[in-house]
Image (cartoon, rainbow over the protein chains, first blue to last red):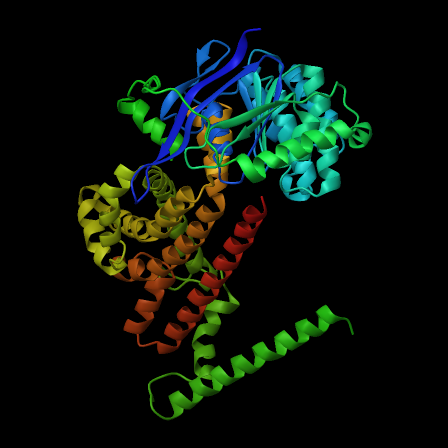
Length: 290
Length: 264
C-alpha cells in the first residue's frame, strides 16, 4: 500500500547562542492512509517539533514531508491540529470557535449547512449542551473536547495531536481517548498523536514510533500494535500481550532510547524554498506572522 | 446590619473625615499664610450662582458650571476620538512590524514627553490657514497628539503579547489577513487597548485646561483663567474641584468599560 504521509530524512536545526543545534536528524516515517500512529519518546526529544513541522507551523531545515502527493510547505486546514492546551479563542463561544474553521473550509456551503457541521461535531464530542459557552466557562476537559471537534470539523486529510490529553486527569483522559477513537473510526482519518503515555499509545495506535533521545533525535524503533479493533479497554487490560507490549516500549524508553540506529551517508535534499514575498504581500505577511 | 451596608457606612464616614480634614487645612491656610486665598465659605458664596443654575447662560463667560463642562467635554470628545482613530493603527503597526518599530519608535519616545503647552502654538500655526477656526483646530490637535501616546504604546505592547497559540490557530485555519486581524489580533489586543484608551482619556481631560486657557475658547479651563484675571479667586478653586470630579467620573466610566472587555 502506498504511503499517505511520507517523511524522509527530516532535519530540524535551531540557532542557539552556542551555535546551531540539530534537534531532529534523519527522521524517516511512512504512514498509510487511515492509519493511527503514536509518536513516543522522552520529553524534549523533538517529537513535538516533528509534529509541528508536519503541521507546517515550523520550517523544515532539511529533508521533506509529502502529504497526499504534495510537499508540505505551510500550515493549512487540510491538517487538523489538536494542541496540548486546547487553544480556543476565549472571546468566542465553543460553537464560534468551531465555526471559525468550518467557515474557512466549507465556504461554498450554505450558512445552515455550516452550522449543522459545527453542531454535529460538537454533539459527537459531548458538548451539545455547552456549545454556546465561552472557554472560560468550560472545564479543561470540555475545552479539549471542543479542540477535538474543531480539528475534525475541518474534515482534514490528517489529524495531528500534540499531547492532547497531557493536562487532563485520568478519568477525563480515558473518556476523551474514546471520543477520539470513535470520531477517528467514523471519519476514517489518518492520525498522528504525540504522547509520552505508553498506555495511551498502545490503546489508540496501529503503530507506535519510538524516538531516540535528542539532540539529533530520530526513529529508534517502530512497534506494530497487535490488538484488533474496535478495542475494549477492559479486555486489553486483562490481555497479557498488552503487558508484554507495554514492557517492550518501556524497555526502549528506559534503556535503548539513547542508541542511534545507523544511517546512510550524504546530504539530504533541501526543502522547497517559498517564493520571497514582496511589497504589500510582505507587509501583510508581517501582519500574520507577527 | 448586613455586611455591605456596614461597609458603605464605614466608607462614607472615612470620606467625610477626609473632606473635613482637607477643609480644615484649607481654612487654616487662608487664615494664616495665604490671606488672599478665599475660605471654603467664601468660595461657596462665589461659586453658588454657577452651581444653583448649572445650565444658565448669562453671558459668553458667565454660564452655569455644567454648561461650561459640556463645552469642554465636547472638545475633549472630538480630540480624544481623533487620538484613538490615529493612535490605534499606529500602535498596531508598531506592534506588528519590527521595521516600522525601528523607524518610528524613537520618534514616538521623543515626542511623547512633550508638554501640551508646547504643542498648542504649533497646532495653531498648523491651522493658521483655517482663519477663525485656527484656535479650535489647534486645541483639537493638541488634545489629540497628547492623548494619543498611551493608546499607541499600550496597543503596541498588546499586539506583541498576543499568544503564539492564537496565531497558530489562525495559521492552521489559513485565515485571510483581514480575518486574522479582526477575529484574532484585535480581540486578543482589546484588553491592552482599553488600558491605553483609559489613560488617553485622562490625558485628554488634563490637556483641555491648558488648551482653553491659551485659546480662550469657552469652557471650564478658560473660566478658571478669566476668574483669575477678574480676581474671583474662589472660582479658581471651584474650577479645580470641578475638573477633578469630572476627571474622576470619566476614569470610573472607562474602568467599567475596561473590565467589561477584560472578561470577554
